[in-house]
Length: 299
Ligand code: SF4
Image (cartoon, rainbow, N blue to C red; front, top):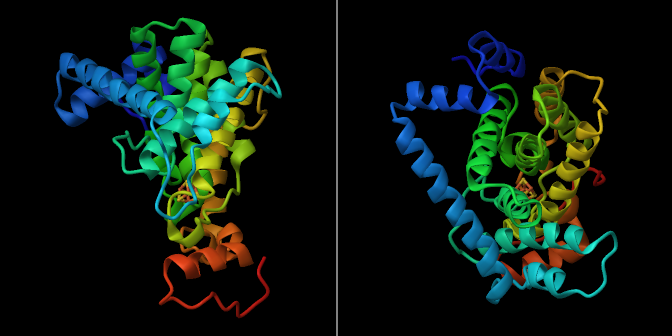
C-alpha cells in the first residue's frame, strides 16, 4: 500500500475495493509490523487518552505558571451565552480543554503534535457525544486522520518550527475535517475536499508562541482550528469543493512553509510573540533575556 499522496491513497482503495481507513490499516501492518488486533487496541487506548484530556480539562483547574493559560475550556463549557449554538460552544470547549491539559503537563496524544493536541480530541469527543458516532467509526476516522497526517508530513510538514502553525494546527484540523466527513457518511471525494478546504483556509498561519511557551496563541488556535475543520467538513458534505485538488493544496502548504521567515517558525521572534505585551511577558518569565531588537520593521 502506498500513502505518498491523496491520489495514490484513492488509487489503492479503488484498486483493492477497500475503504480509505483500511488502506491506512494495511499500511500500518506492513510498515510497522503490527497485527490488526494490536492496531485496533492501540486506537482504543489513544482515544481513551484523548477523551480523558478533554474531561479532565473541563473539570480540573487548568492554569500554567506563566499565567498564559487560564481555564479557557472551562469558561467556554460554562458560558450561558452561545454565539452560534450550545454545541458549537462545546466543540471549542472540548478542544481548548484538551490543549490546556497539555499546557499543564497532563497526559495527551500528540496528534500530530503537542501544540495541536486539542483539535482531534475535541472533534472525536464531539462526534461521539453529539452525533452518537460509534467508537468503531471513531477509530476508523482516526485511521483516516493518520493517513492525512502521513501525507502532509511527507509532502509539507507537521512541525511549527518547519512550516509554521499551518503545519501543526492546520494539519490537525485537516485530519479532523476528514474524520468528521467520514463519520457523518461522506464519500472519498468529500473527505478529500474537506482536507483541501481546511488547508486552504489555514494556509500561511505562522508559529509565534509568546515567550516560546506552547500556550499562547496555541490554546486559542486549537479552538479556531476545530471551527475551520467543522466549516470545511460542512462545505464538503454540502457538495462544495475546494476546486484546487487536495494534493496541490498540500504542495502549496509546503511552499508557504518553506518561504516563511524564521521569525515565524517557533522562534518567538515574530507575530504575537513580538508584540510589546508579549515581550513584557517574556521579560517577566525570563528576566535574564533582553527584549527582541528588530533589525527591520516587524511584519
Ligand atoms: S503557535 Fe507554534 S507552538 Fe503554538 S500551536 Fe501553533 S505551531 Fe504549535
